[in-house]
Length: 329
Image (cartoon, rainbow, N blue to C red; front, side, top):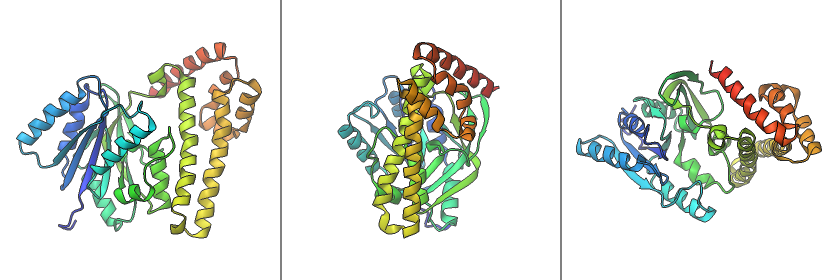
């Protein structure tokens, strides 16, 4: 790699992760690549996460750590803040990103020392044209035990991706909420400069949370999940219009058709999870192709969702626990 090395920003987003933030920061500090900015952003944690961050960064600076560390603490929790404040928080965080590439990192995941080096190498080898680079990851549990390997060819995961600032500036902030920002960025990059996949694990991705564990109600969690997926398509339809002048006429037509078609599909499937009407739930179930019923697990969950809530929801939670146990084994 030439001596004209691009500046990279690693963004670590943390919230109530006092039990693992030390390991996450150690992974960031150990990066072999330079120049590197490390932005540590705390989302108003209520535990000792922020205190630990301050202690570790102070010691790192005192010991002449090679990377530049930038600290940020949101004035409110961005998840609960109203839209205007949420947009202000996001805009402020974006203003801290000075690098050409943003390497995303969650507060419970651990970047391997060569992660940034490998990402930049693949980006430069592709003439810096791709707008998103995604790697594989080692899967670990809350206690750090190994759970396998996640391929870079699986669904888009923000923890294992890096993306360009130019892409962020081209599309701007997300205007629809709630969404899965990782998936939206993936498709934004596909439409713009392209995506590069690195077929090797470059971080330890911790599996310890999820919708069902967060709220204790699998159906309610999945309603939010499906709502996010549906809203992703709404956001992407706006994004297609924003870059229409950069696309050929056939590409514009194909992207718009794809996202509109998927929006209709997810609208129908969402009925199965959230509707109180049996005919509407049955309509949602029937809208799914048989192949998708098998691939998404709806062969198990679908019939339970057709039952009255007072019977179906407890059985749904039980079925999900059994599926998770079988999957882990």
